[in-house]
Image (cartoon, rainbow, N blue to C red; front, side, top):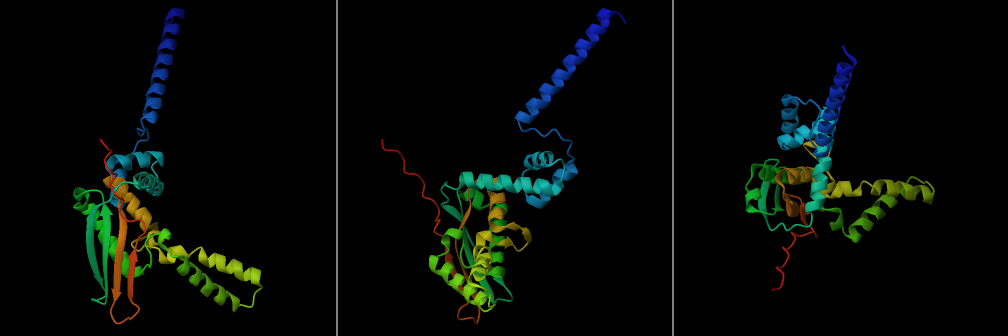
Length: 253
């Protein structure tokens, strides 16, 4: 090979490498998955999460094909989308009921979204059914952290303090015990903070976030009531302070 031919070959190879780098850079900038992800893996992730096919493919690429990591990626994206859409008006939605334990426990819950179109989808209907079933099984007392009254919080704290005091430990140790128990308080009484009964790795808030990410609308629980037959204290009524947002008034002409 002549010196001129060798130089030409080197220049051609350098050009090919530069072109490949440019393609890879463009793919990363556009969020295009560069990892070879099988259709079977995408389908499995979609079946587990209900997320759109392209979102599943991108999540798997970001997680280097690891299914559990991809689920975490999708959940984080869902929470991010949920936060972005939190201020949008949710004046539509649906009310559903759930009867459990041979008619001994009943729940009615209102879940809001932005449009009648989304309210009629199977994904939305599945969500409100799952939420009603969860309420029947777990009996939360509030919907969100913000809904917990100061009185309820302090009352529970006093109960924990009295229980801890019976141990005979010093006051400073008792307070640490109380603080530890109170950290679990919201999880015990707030619907949004509770692990979903069908998947303990997912809170109700995260469950809603995945649906927001998939359906593209703000979604929220506004109120529910739970009855238990034969229990005089077996009625729970919860109404969120975060009521469905009012649509912005049109600008003055």
